[in-house]
Amino acid sequence: MSVGRRVGRVLSLLGVGLMTVTGAALAAQAEAPYRMPPASQALFEDLHNKIVHFPLVMTLLATLFLWWGRRRPEFEPVSFWMVWATAASTLAAYFSGQAQARDYVEGPKAWLVELHGQQGIVIGIGQALWVLSLLRDNTRRFSWVLGVILSVMVLAAGFLGGLVAHGK
Ligand code: HEM
Figure 1 (cartoon, rainbow, N blue to C red):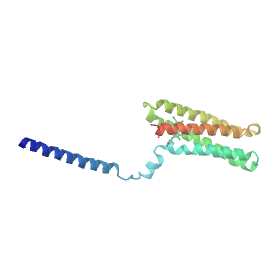
Figure 2: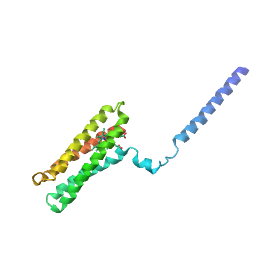
Figure 3: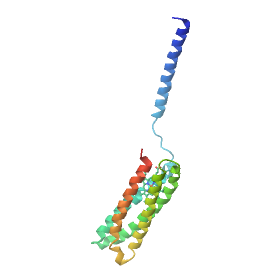
C-alpha cells in the first residue's frame, strides 16, 4: 500500500474516532438532568399556562354548586362567591393570555391564537353576565344554565389552548 493511501486511511480512522467522541459528548449533554430554575422564574414564567387551571376548574365547580343550590339554599352564598372568584380568574387568564400571545404573532399558529383569544373574550363577557345573573331573584334561578354553557365554552377554550401550546 502506498504511503499516501496509508496516511489517508489513518486520517479517516481519526475522523471516525473524533465524530464518535463528539457524538457521545453531545448525547451526554442532551441527557443532562433537568435543573430547577429559581423559584421566582418558575412561578411567574408562562403565567397563562398556570392561571388557566383556575377558570377551568372553578367554572365547573361553581356550576356544580349552583346546581346543588337549587334545592339547598345554604349553598347559595358559596356559589355566589365562587362565581365572582371564577370571573376574576378568567380576567387574569385573559391578560396573561394576551401577554403570551405576542410569541405567536408571526407564526403559523397566529390564526389559532386569535381564535383562542376570541374564545377568552366571549367567556369573559359570559362570566360578567353570570355574576350579574346572581344579583336578581328572577335571573338567579337560571344561573346554573349559564354555568353549564360556560363550562362547555371553557373546556373548548382549554382544548384550543392546548393545541396552541402543544399542537404539532
Ligand atoms: C377563559 C379563558 C382562557 C382559557 C380557559 C385558556 C386556556 C388555555 C390552555 C388550557 C392553554 C394550554 C396551556 C398549557 O398547555 O400549558 C392555553 C394556552 C394559551 N393561551 Fe389561553 N386560555 C384562555 C384565554 C386566552 C386568551 C384571552 C388569550 C389571548 C390571546 C390566550 C392565549 C393563549 C396562548 C398564547 C397560549 C399558548 C401558551 C404557550 O405558549 O404555552 N388564552 N390557554
